[in-house]
Length: 243
Image (tube, rainbow, N blue to C red):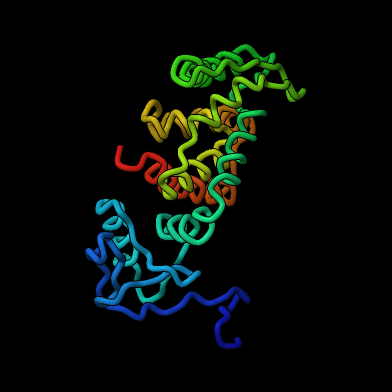
């Protein structure tokens, strides 16, 4: 086995090189300090936050590492790195991608049968559409099956106005929730505190859960789902900001 590779040929995890991880106040922000030294993103920018609570949660991920550092167990850190190194310089492009999801939003595409699935979709998704109508001023057209239905420019403009650009961490979290759920409307409902993370997760998995009930699942699929849920929890935390 060559250096830097494990027995399965995967890149070996880096060894933990620090004893203490904490959030410390520096230059008006809360920075992640490892043994007192501010850590940096892969892009060499200080890993720092205006939100002390968020910084402490990120520091806790670093503190929880064992003999090696496993990024898979650090979803907030990974998302923060992406926000600082990527989203910060591409805010309008990221916002536009969220709006694009609204153009073919999960909650607009309904089954026509069986009745139990139709009822489940309605129970989980109709409140999201009501949120879009009542709080965003956006009315969306429903479709049966997968045939594309075009949404109005007014609805998409309302979604665009609702996407925040000022806080890069909130925007990054909103983007990931949108991608994980396939729904900009679910993501915005989460951002505004109208859906809990559990309710958002359930809404995003109506069809998948239906198929699992019919056909079952396997260990690999369950592991992938658990990893997605871990990322979802982190993304929701960021998407809500200080809410």
